[in-house]
Image 1 (tube, one colour):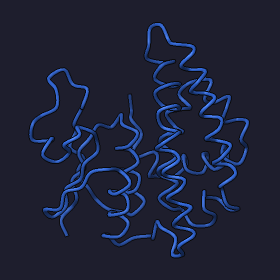
Image 2: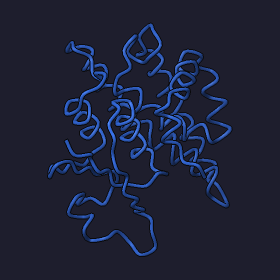
Image 3: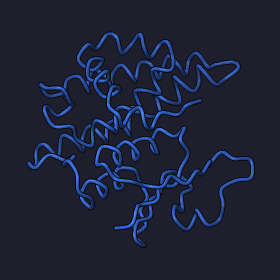
Image 4: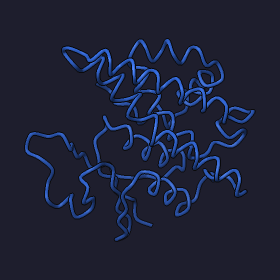
Length: 208
């Protein structure tokens, strides 16, 4: 079976989610760099893969796919390797709930409103940061309440929820406020330390 091709930039949280999923499955892949913020704009050929001009997108044996959650599920189901989804309906529902919550309520607040605003803006908007931190606190509270007993978010099995959450939280922790807030949630902090120790995390970390 041919290697899948993943299009995107190594700075992207969502590209990293897809890459961590591929690494956890032990799937070899080609990463084709694509910077959606490049001065020259987005190449027309990429819009044929992803008409909304977001990253990542995936190609595999003529099959094209975008949306990170769809890519992750495809990788889990199309390739050999450890199963990354629970076998029971309730477990899969919990996994999907965590992923959807992070996408809807966590990503913007934790990555853009806190980390990017604090670290990349010459004059950070403190009101925006404060609002992001308030939202992030709610997200972490809910994540802690949903976490099952065991090393991973759903218990003893590492699922797609783990590589989905880890890159979002990793970016959040670039800001001192993010590190301070996570320290208040011991179970999630311990979980994050376990994920950060995995090869899939190290292999997908942006060097600079």
